[in-house]
Length: 413
Image 1 (cartoon, rainbow, N blue to C red):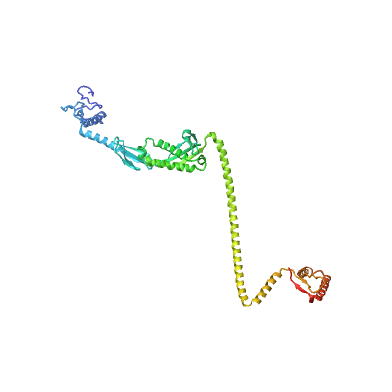
Image 2: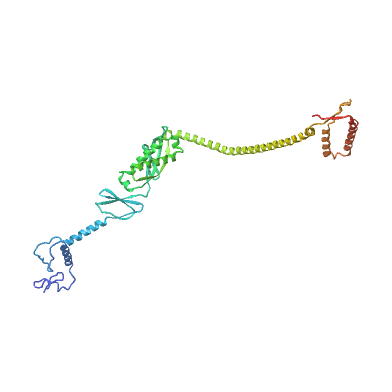
């Protein structure tokens, strides 16, 4: 009998029919039947209609469709709540801070590490980088890593002596307080830029043009930084200025040539000053050494004169004591000593005052000097020279001896 003919029980391999339900089923379970079973279980959780019989007929419970199951609703709600709670887990990286707001108001600041907050829409977290250095510029804009473009509205400033300079400045800053950085100002970067421009104009306006263009750059940058930080402490934007660097300071383009000439003149002036300073450093030590030497010589001379005067005073005191004992002898001795010192440097002339013969002049000192000179240099002249000298000496000696008894020596100068 065919499977699908009347009386065959509709027992084909692709159907679940047959007598006795599924008791006589020999093949694998039907895929459609498995899907129907899973669907019936899910519908049971939410209160759906009852499951079908194995023959495909619906089972009537008599009361109609059931309501949602409490157990199923609880499971679904639990899963939703668990997912919502897990969405509140967040991690704050190193060098950042997490600012937690509750219903839009500040609640807390999270440090680096894992944290949890009440998920949206109750709490929200905004992460702020507080470790990296940020940068703003005044007076120029960077068009590329190697090129910049001047912004004259920001760069042109008036100095104390009513001159105009072109100042380009860069500011490096860091977020010091994440909460203040978010809540105290709508645009902290723009606020800092305007504050920097105002502080720079105030500092430049109190200084002369030459000072700003030459040696005053570092002072202008430091004064601007101090003024910015002082103002930031009042308004608390959560920003700390780390460094202010003046990139360039130039006069306006219309007076650039004249300013370059002034710079060259200033450089020449500095060169001359340096040369004069070098000469000064060379001459002054030499003069100081000469002055020290003269002072030492003067001191030695003073000491010598004082010692000599003290010695003369001591000798005079001794002579005074001797004079008190023997005045005549002391006078004669002093006279003889004095004449001895005086006549050592005087010429000597012998004069015969009693004889009527012509004056005989005998320069004894010169004769003695000549005799000494001839004795040292003329010993090699031979016997003839010696003989002549002896003859002259003998004649002179005879003439002098004949009148020596009538001569009296007078010392003259």
